[in-house]
Length: 356
Length: 267
Image (cartoon, rainbow over all chains, first blue to last red; front, side):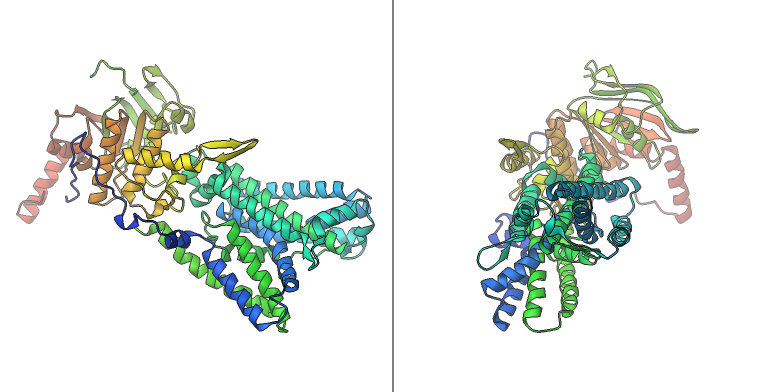
């Protein structure tokens, strides 16, 4: 037997010398920077911006910026919520179609029941929270992968969106929102624009939500629990973190964020397509992953997801400004997702097991 | 020493799973400032025993006393509230989270700004730094992910966290079994540190070489029963190893091996 061990110091001896690697004594600015999950995304955003700013005339102007921040904001709001959910170790594939469901619920309540738009908006948020709660409960209770559970929710919502809309309106869209009482004020708050360059109000929402989410993650108890739940749910439970409550709360947050965007889009267009939002759930996940979220949970950032959404927004608008076929954007999405996953994998390895 | 009231005591505790006798009539006392080593081979009942102590299982017979008072723990949380903390080998820390976030996970200190409650990060980092310092670890970067620490240091984070949050009894479940020789030595040193701070430590292990240097009392379980109890000084390391390995059985095995290969077996 070679694993014989003795304790060298008698009790009361000076404490053993530090076992933290001496080379880590000075935490340089560079080390701190490299530890940020969103670093890669920030660099990529800069590259994408410079590329389109140099190759097209409009992209670098404020007018152009109003365009790409608009796309980025409507992607970014759910993407930030999805990032929190992914840090918490779960997925939500129903977030994209939820934007459509929310718009339809609000639209049908307002147009078919002549409900004041504000009342309809409140009920829409309640509806979204309920869907998120159901997603969360099913994941927590059944312990099935959230990928499967929310895939089911995705198709259920998609079917209901189309079926109910056709049943009630006889078409695949709900229109006439602009005649509903309260529409003007609601439009100003959720759908309007500001400044002479026509920046959308959604950009303000996007920035505010990103700041809020970042603060929650960094400075609140819930933020710490989110990291713990996604990093190692058993360890978190052992030290008293209410794991089911955190997860259900994250699913509800994601649904509500998606509903917010659904309401914004519906108000802006004064109508809702029953197919609205289908496929966007993957863009939210891509934005979160590009922003540094690990698919396995426990690591990531809200700012990163916001930057991820910015990259996607810039690319979509940049591609159309360049005069290329806009379908090329899917190629772009695939490539940046692949790159991000490869980079994140390296980051994870260095953070998780460098000195095992 | 023995007229003190033990922090934690079992009197003839038994546990059955259906008709399987997992633990039968085990009596052990844990005193403050002492390391009680619970030794036993796989299947000896060590896990069942600590699960009773930490509130995961409820014992079927016998008594469990916390500071002299008969108790039935309803849940692990219940045990924790009574000052009994358990550090599980692999399930103690979240690798991707920083040291200070791990240290306070689930019990974050807060300060309030009007209606808003925020985590007091500076306070948390300072306490973590001081507490780790008491274990002899100088954490220079509180934001360092726990995953980049060595296995022994990770145990230290879990141990110092448990002590900071008021553990009077610290149950360490096989803290050295996944570690190399050097790292095991470091963990043993932390166990000694915890003892110096007046904590009653229950050190579960199947390795008598790890138990012997730090143990004040030794308890050996075998097939769910108490094989023996010794105070430090009543038993030598070799005797402990022998008892662990099943005494006579090992002699028999050594003899057979010697005969088979006709030279002394390496000890």
